[in-house]
Amino acid sequence: MTTDWGFDLLLEHTEDGYRATVLQSPCGDALAPFTPPFEPREQHTIIQQLLADPGQDAARRSEQFMLARRVGGRLFDTIFHGAILECWQASWRAAYAERATLHLRLQLGGVLELRALPWEYLHDGTRDEFIALSAHTPLTRFQERAHQVLPFAVEGPLRVLVVMAGPESYPPLPIGREWRDFIDTVDYLAADRRILFERLAKPTLLDLQRRLRQHEYHVVHFVGFSIYDPQTQEGVLVFEDENGRGRPVSGQHLGTLLSDHYSVRLALIGSRNAARIPGIDPAAQVVEQLVRRGVPAAAFQPTKLLDRPSLAFVHEFYHALAAFGAVDVAMAEARRAIELEEAGASWGMPQLVSRVRDGRLFARKPAAVAPPKPRSNLRSVFQPKPAKP
Image 1 (cartoon, rainbow, N blue to C red):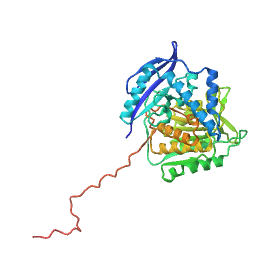
Image 2 (image 1 turned 135 degrees about the vertical axis):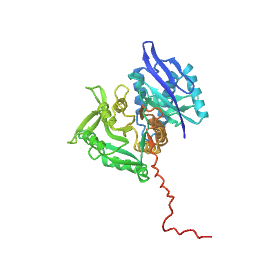
Image 3 (image 1 turned 90 degrees about the vertical axis):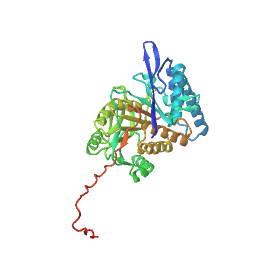
Image 4 (image 1 turned 135 degrees about the horizontal axis):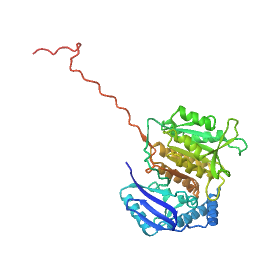
């Protein structure tokens, strides 16, 4: 079994400025000040360039990849210097020697300018490697909680409830084709009874609540639209009402609903029209709110992905999850699948927020062992008596 080690890194804004603190690692703790690497205007331009659709142009994809490398290098050098760099390198070497997984858990708190930075592109120049692309150093935006979240014991296959919402007055969403492509991608998992996928017939919040009461589900997967609500100043998902019109649902509301069902350990948000506000995607805000309201983990898969990379993400993510692996490792595998399909920079767009330290959301429930039948000392009346000598 793979050994799990953690590298907990807290980034915060204090009265004395920005500070990075290694709270826990295989090689002790460390502390260092830092200065954000980008001015707000520069940061917005960089993010827009990373999000730009390169299409089928190989040259543009290559430029985008090199941009991700430069951005990731600046982010890495901003935080990982001095004692923190020494701690990271020593921890990485120790984990590599023990063949352990070193989970990088970033704690960003409520600092908006830090949450808006694309930490998923962290690039370690000493090894010329994107940290989040390696299954040995999976990256999570971590939210610390007072109590430990234990894996949920599952007997039989994992169950995923898929919510696909295409309300009126929004751009047409080919729900039928989306569902067929989705099922064609993961049907082998259902055939092997590793994961069962079910689509919610009516994508309303009330129907979701009813369905969760009727059956035990482990993952809720939403496909639809996310928008920014100017009144609440936060991102929301758009479900449908009883008449097929759009109904905005905040991450706080949805998170409260999902956290009432103990078996639901993960929400995966496939956002379609994520119009960004100063550096933060509305769906990414929803993901943060879901975990803040009690959902153990939530992932965000943005609309900017092309069809093949998007389906590759779904394929690899659920394949790893079906093996009861850590969710952050599943995200790393899914990122690499996107990179292989597109060879650009869109692999860094998905985000994972979690409050599970080792990323293990599920555990196989051991099969019940039948008690042994009692043995009788009495000889059967039908058994012949032994012959006399």
